[in-house]
View 1: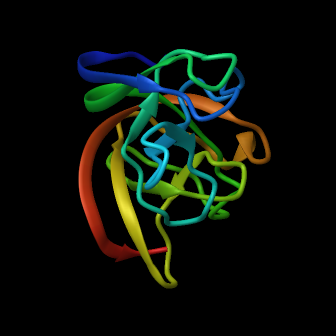
View 2 (view 1 turned 180 degrees about the vertical axis):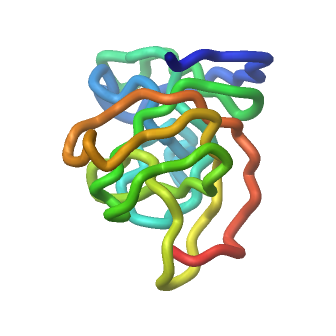
Length: 139
């Protein structure tokens, strides 16, 4: 059962329709100053979208600290997610996945719940602790 606790949120504007991206990672656009979906494996993440803005310019509520719900998928890294696992942006789907070996990646959160491989290839919402550990891990 996913949950939220002690969320620290900021507001901004969405850069596009993000109505299907609730609990997915977002980042501020470098030129637009609006929140955009993060869809590159290992990319920097600013927070997790808490609402579902349906058009560019609509308000985006973004969790930047605390424990939040997040969409994960075990197929992105090919392994189950265990409690405490480091999480990164895992794939072009833009969900979070367990960090594995490879190039550098932005470690954004730690899993507060498990996600087994039996849920592979489907998006699952679990609780994560936002840590912003940074780009010191491997993708």
